[in-house]
Amino acid sequence: MQILLALIFGAAIGLAAEILVGGRESRGAVLAPVLGAVVAAMAWAGLTWAGLGIGDPAIWIAAVAAPAIITPVALIILTRVRAARDENERQRLRIG
Image 1 (spheres, rainbow, N blue to C red):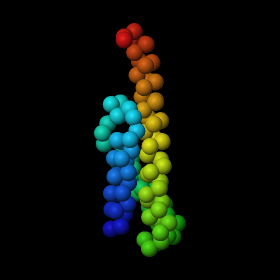
Image 2 (cartoon, rainbow, N blue to C red; image 1 turned 45 degrees about the vertical axis):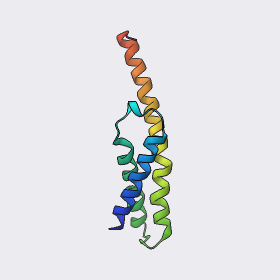
Image 3 (tube, rainbow, N blue to C red; image 1 turned 180 degrees about the vertical axis):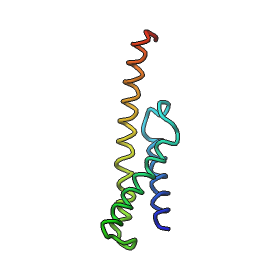
Image 4 (cartoon, helix red, strand yellow; image 1 turned 90 degrees about the vertical axis):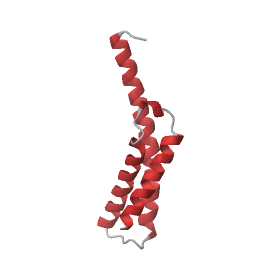
């Protein structure tokens, strides 16, 4: 049940990252919240497999900190890669 809270926190952090990171027009609106939820779930699952329980504060810190760090970085990288690929495609097609 608590993993649902981690997913919700991750999705909320992803939504905040979607709003704060520029280049929203070059990616889908759902990408950031889903990415945040997936990162939070991976952090939660990894730490529970490592033996941490739901009462351990480290699992909650990781479930919030991991998406807060990884999601904005991933969005920046994805936005830059998309812009570069779009520019290459425009040059290849000789448009604008």
